[in-house]
Length: 433
Length: 181
Image (tube, rainbow over all chains, first blue to last red; front, side):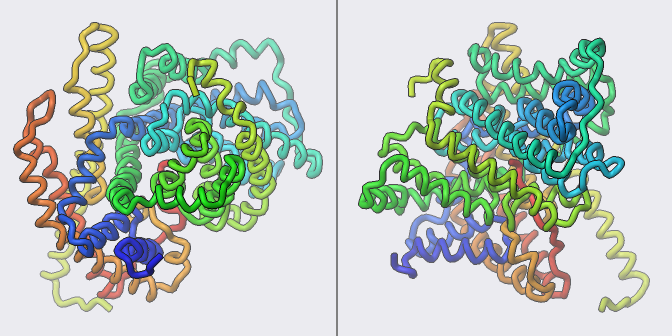
C-alpha cells in the first residue's frame, strides 16, 4: 500500500494522535476529517455520518440502559445476598471463596452486560472477603476477581454483543443465547484453575451452610436470580426487544432496590444515573468516531480488499478463524475492546461471510476473545482496576491471572472449533443459521 | 511558577473557578436528565404497547434524541480526562514534559480539524431544516444542532487543554481510563 495515499495518511493520523493520548473517538474523527480534506470531499460529511449513524442505530440505546441497570444493581447491594447464596452452593469445596467469586460472577453476568460494572460493584467485596485473615493472597484474590468478571459480557446481557450486532447485522437475541454456553464454559475453565491452585497452595474450605438455612438464603437471593429469567424469557417470548429488555432490567433493579431492599437513597439514584450518563458519553464518543471512520473505510472498500487478499491464500474457515483469533488476542493486549469491535471486526466480517462462517458464531467467538483482552497485559483494563481496588502490585496480579488466561484460551479454542457449543442454544430457540 | 499579582486577580480567578464548577454541576444535571428521560421513554413505550395495547412511536424518537444529545453533550461538557477511552500505554509511560508536548500536538490537531470542518458541518445541519422527524415533526436542524455545540465545545475544551499544557501543566493521567465493557 502506498504510505502516502489519502487512506494511509488517515491511518497515520489516527495512530499518532491515538498514541499521543488523544481519546480514540476524537482521533478517528480528526483522521477522517483529514481524509475528507485530502480527497476533496464535502467536510460536512463527518457531521452527516456521525449524526445519521447515531440517529439510525436504535439497537445502541441498549448500551446506556444496560449500564444503568448495572449501576442500579450495584447500589442496591443485591451482591451481599448473592454472595451468601453462592457460598451455600460452592463454599464447601477446596478454594471455596474462589469458587464463590466465580459463581457470583456467573449470576451477576446474567444481570449486567459489563465486566467493568461487575468489578466495580462486587470486586471490592469479593476481594475483602478472600483476603480477610490472610487466607488468600491479595494478588490471587484480585486476579480471580478480574478473571471471573470477564464472564459478565459473555453471558447475556452483553454490551459488546450489542456493538457487534451493530456492525454485523446479526440478531442480538440469538447472539445473547449463543453466549450462554461459552460463558459457562469460561466459568468452568476458571473453576478448574482455582481447584488446581487451591490444592497446590492449600487454600481453605468454607464451613458448610446447614441445609435448613438454604431456603431462606435462596429466597433472599431470588430477586437477583430472577432477573436473567425475566430478561431472556422476555426476549425469547417476543414480549420485548433486546433494547427494551435493557430498560426492563433497569426498572426491575430499581424496583428491587427501592421496594424490596429499601436501601437506596435519592442521592444514590442520582449517582447511578450520572455514572451511567458518563459511561454512555465515553463509549458513545467511541461509537461516534467509529461511525465516521467506518465511512472512510467503506469508501476505500477495505473489507473487500481484505477479502480479496485473504481469498488468495485459500484459507479454510478454520484457518481463518484461527488467524482472526490470534490477531485479536494480540490486539487485545494493546487496545481497548470496544475499539477492536467497532473498528477492526468490520474488516473481517465480509471474509467470514464469504467463507460461510455463521455470523452469530463469529460474533460470540470474537467477543469472547476480545473480552480475554480485558485481562491481558500490558493494556488490560480489569487488571488496572483490581490492582487499584486491592492495592496488589500490578505485576503480581498479572502473574496470578496468567493461568486463568491460558485456561480461557483453551475454552476459546473449544468454542471456535466446535461451533455447536455456540449455536446449539440459539438453534433450539429457532435460529435458522 | 505562578506570580501573585494582587488580591483582585486571585479573587477573580477564584470566582472563575467557582463559576466553572457550578456550570460543570449543571452540565452533569442535564446529562443525567437526558439519560433518565431515555429510560422513562422506554418504560412508557413498553407500558403503552403491552399494557394499554396502544403502540406509540414518539417514545422511540425522544429516546434516540436523548442518546445523541447525551453522548455529544456529555463528551464535551461532562467527561473528565480520566473517563475518556484512550490508548495510554505510551502516554502514561513518558515523562511529564513529553506528555505536555503530546497534549499540544493532539490539541492543535483537534482544534484545527474541527475548526476547518465547522462550516461544512454547519451547512449540513442547517440544510437539514427541510426534513422533519417522523413522529413529533420537529425540524431536523434543531435536533442536529447539538453537533455544532459539540464541535465548538470540543474546540474550546482542547484549546484550553493545549494552552494549559503550553503554560506548563500537563494532563492528569491514570492508567486504564474509560470504557464500558
